[in-house]
Length: 398
Image 1 (tube, rainbow, N blue to C red):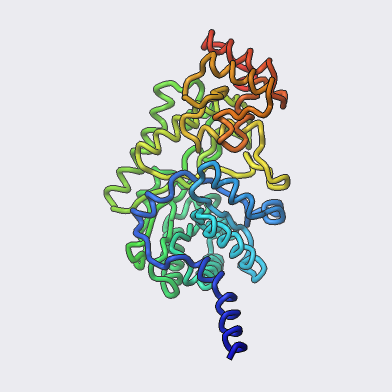
Image 2: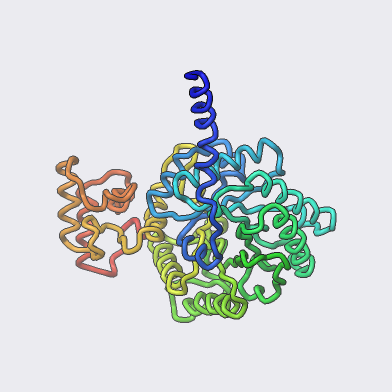
């Protein structure tokens, strides 16, 4: 009898992790899902060799700690058993840490050469993914294509055919999982109008759009950002309004799948202060519109090899995910004052003193305003100088 009880107990223990990962299996409406997503980030955990090889659950925990609510898990590889096993590990880690996972497929072959054969490969990829994650928590959703580019940009009908075919295949396995589709020309909101809603959307559908996905520019008039002029702000607000109009007329909620605080991949000519100014306006504008977003991308802010945030850019990511945090604001009251300077000096004298800003992961990096890697009296002096002269730029702002 004891042997039978032990066998039953052992069997239950073996299957418990599966149920833990699948979560409460209740479908989530797209509008509720939109409100749950909040602020997220694009991740390379299943895309690049570095992202895959150095991935660990600690990344999920670190992201969760600073207020990230969802991750857009970009995948570039074929749906092999090895890839699916790794993807399942990532999804499980997310769900077990209350992080919403969105799987997004790159599908380069289809974008470069949108033939029926390559379309079928995309559909087959998603069918294998849907089979692997059947029964999983409905917090997991499927983003069918990572940004329409290349030859496919000129073929909206082909893109819609892929969405129709792939959605039908997924629905044969999973009727109520949220599917996300995006338009041509790098998922621009102006092109949402060309989307054809898949027949079997089953009222579990969202639309994705991007702007400033590669960051702002100081010369490109279509995404220009210099000092944050009214004209530059209007570029942002106009695109948000286009998405809102489409969302309301089609009764389908939208989500921004990518925007970048700076042109990191090109000139990379924005100071930390400029990045924070741009990011604050983007964040507040999207929050006002109640449209969730994912920042592009994790490797710009987090060193997966060392499992730590990149100090130089941490003030930027903090400004996005910790609303109201100011560089040098040691007491976290939202205002830079002589008290902040005094607190920094106190910390320098007595390292055991805990400052309010230390409640934030890597919070002390926001006080290292001279960017020398050490908290010192110089930092206190710079903060005081900034208090006395608002136009003064601390080294971290240059």
